[in-house]
Length: 163
Image (tube, rainbow, N blue to C red):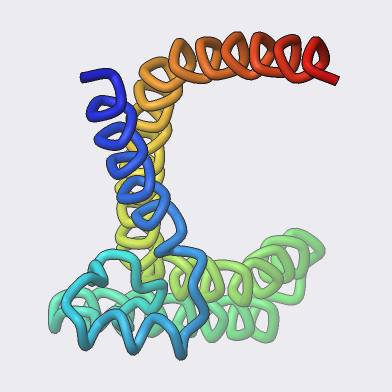
C-alpha cells in the first residue's frame, strides 16, 4: 500500500512539474505544445493593439483642436495687446500645449495597459495556485522521504556490519 501511495505521489509530482515548466518553454517548444493541445492561450505574452472607439478618437481630436486654438488665441493676444501679462500668460499656454497633447496620447494607452495588467495578474494567480499545489505535494512526499532516509541508514548499518 505504501509503495502504491509513493508511486501515485511521484506521478502526481511529475504532472505538476510538467505544468510548472510549461511557461518556461521557448517559442519553438510552445508551438509544438500548442499543436498537442497542452498549451494555454492565456500564457501568450502578445497583446492585441488597442483600437480606440469613434467617440475616443473624436474626443482626442476635439482636445487637440482646442489646444491649437488656445495657442492661436494666445499668439493673437500677444500681438494685439503687447503687455507683459499677455506675454507671460501666452507663454504659459504655449508651453503647456505639447505636454497636454502628450498626456492625451498617453491616455489612449490605458486600456491596453489595463489588459496587460489583468493578464499578468491572472498568470500570477495561476503561479500561486501551482506553488500551493507543489507545497501540498512536498508535504505528502516529506514523510516518505524521511522514511526512505531511515531505511537507507539501516541498510548502511547492515552493510557495514557485513564487511
